[in-house]
Length: 69
Picture 1 (cartoon, rainbow, N blue to C red):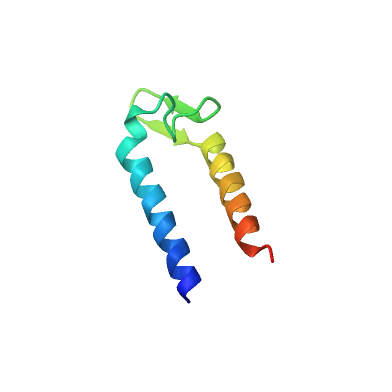
Picture 2: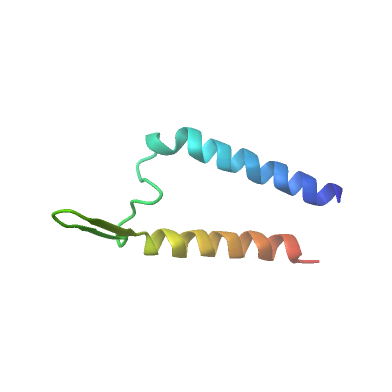
């Protein structure tokens, strides 16, 4: 239980730092090259495919590191 709480706390700190300093980074999470953005006359469609892949890879690596014994 303690290990899970520590992990959750570290994760919250990382997410908080990303939200706070995200606009100052040279790249914007959610606006990476390869994300699909279509702007029509009256509609906008946005699908962050590259961002989804990047988040998936990072979470997979983190989970793999924490589940190693």
